[in-house]
Image (cartoon, rainbow, N blue to C red; front, top):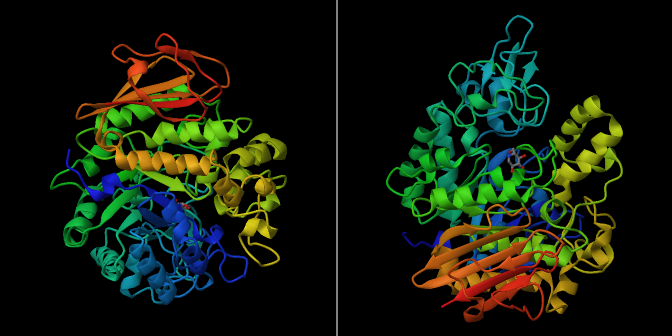
Length: 555
Ligand code: NOJ
């Protein structure tokens, strides 16, 4: 397996609006980021991925870009960004930008011109279609619920938007659009950024003629016509050959509905590789049917199956991107862990994924074990997809159950402000009101308290990332699962150049009898990470404590 910096790094994701407010207007910004660079560095990560910082009407909090070459004024200026970039680099932190090219904002000049000057080249930058009589051009539904088409009276045409109405999809089949994308990439790479997280990159190529789907879903009807479209390989290769390969940069593509088989088409190492890694979603469906709004009971077996499939299918061929949280996912302790055993389960979940083979991503607040927000009213939510999904759910199951579902599934849970200390607004802002909720648990759960406690989740993350950095077996080792049939234990080993790792995770508060798998003598290994003091072993076995994790190293 080829070694590389992007394989050895770990990444901290900043969702800028809620990270830290440096100018006292209630909204997170670059000045706030600057003030926390030392903190980020102290975690032991090697890179920061910024969710979109670009100028945007914020209908989807930056994923609706109005200008790819300027910074959202609420976040600061281009000079502020360059300072952050420079200061990050000085600290040895790489900077990864979010590249959102499936769609723009409806306030982007291109889109405005596509309406104002329908004979200009900009009209063909987007998917403008005539209706079929009084009907829309096809039956596709937005992934944010509701039809994927919006009618424009002036043009008597519809435009496609797979996300919010204000996020028109770009027509990537137009070579001029691809040239624009390449120019945007060059602009940021020339400035010195180190790579891109490419937003819903697997949606950029739509099936010719945009045919209707024979299937119906309450959201995203038609997804099979674009989730892995006909020219995706070609366009990704073009971006790589014309731009990315000319820089020492990395890419991670966001890829909903991705399978290992399809992922390997894009990330298998070699001359035809399109991207370095992909964010798939399969492991985020252990408590739902492919999407958190279709809630089911959490199943560890389901989770393990996905983890092991990705570990095994990619090993030696391609590289995994590892995550449990981001700005689109509710907090993982609420989903796969336990709020009763918050600290224990947070540490166990961290070990579960960071000790796998791949590049780990950590989302802001995850490192202190932040939890979902106790929403009581749909009016408290601000996310467009939550509101749309709530309306669909309400029509099916009534307002009370729909709200319950929103409380569990909404991505707003991940977007409450980062809890820095016990001061007003959890230290996020000096303004009277932050732009969004402060979780009432901030007096207990905050960075300052975690700094002081040697046994905090925060300090555990530090130890875990340090251990990963110092032990190649965690980075490059192979993977073998044990206890496959257990519904409570997730156990795997890693092997690399004579070193072995045994990773034992309990997903229950109940005591479970664990016996070391054949070939492992626990008395000969060193327990290098655990969430309980004095891990005892008797006869190569032990009984697990609630959400216990142990990592044994054999040298
Ligand atoms: C995926 C992003 O992560 C999400 O936040 C956004 O709403 C959609 N793509 C649309 O850009």
